[in-house]
Image 1 (cartoon, rainbow, N blue to C red):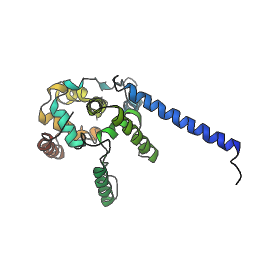
Image 2: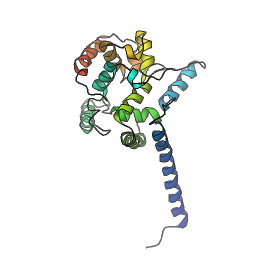
Image 3: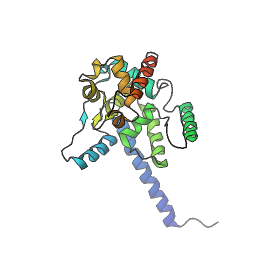
Image 4: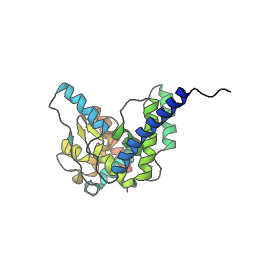
Length: 231
């Protein structure tokens, strides 16, 4: 068997080096953000660019608040609505993923994702909303790193501070002030549940936050959130 050409060997070696370098860049930020709060995320930059296409002076509404200053009901409501096994899993809810696949197959289109809070955070911090195999693979790698190097408290703290809650609205503090005129630490259980219900499609639900669906789903989350385990 003839050996591979030298140019091919060198090309593969260079490609591998670049992949490792790129992954190292992601890992470096994961390690840094274990202690340093992210100033902005990939999703924030993407949304701001979209807003500035319409209004060059547009700015995002975002203000970081420490974990202990976020109302307990919001933590419980978000876990109940988005990832009720958050405390127990290691980044992936395999049962939830299987159920989502079955639901999507039954509907013939994507209607459920099955992503955990950790997976959503990995995507929001570094990636785009594009549903490509490469993005999903990269999301999985970053999720493993988040679960390895951060504790659940830090994952939930960062998630609540960077997740999108409406057009140009990011994080619990901005959301609480946008919809209720109060800080994130003052949210009532009902208000927290209503915010949690918005998360799958915040820019859609903000148009009618008191629709029949929102009201019904809010009551469902209210009934479940008291059983949610949070860090």
